[in-house]
Length: 124
Image 1 (cartoon, helix red, strand yellow):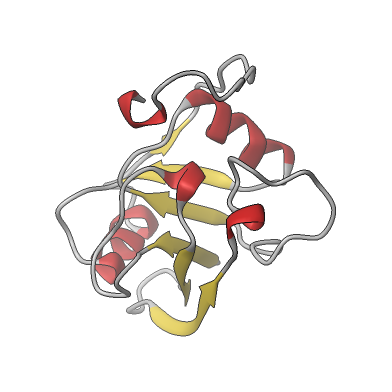
Image 2 (cartoon, one colour; image 1 turned 90 degrees about the horizontal axis):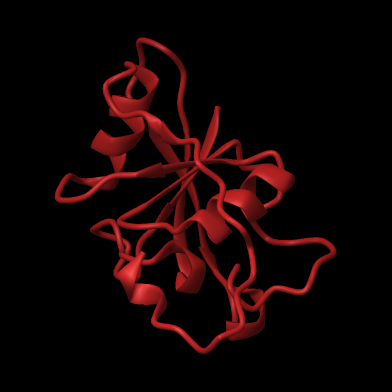
């Protein structure tokens, strides 16, 4: 499986997924340690909150892990075939391993995606 982990410093899991601009990319197989295979830097227009459609640098990812994510983000990821997972206070590779072992579970509730930009996304 291919994972992207939101990580502004490429060391820890970052907060709000919709505004994340840096991701660690891992390949993971059951029973094996996750392997970092790439790092992605995206621009402001490519953050999921601002993205308008078309090809995206995260296409091909199966699971995205971040420190927080709202229903709008979950819905946008589901439409791209990507599962959203929230994990905090653990190393990125440990979060990937936890998902593979079934210890960390995906978010399933997609919300009404009516992001008008006039609210505080950090409250999700």
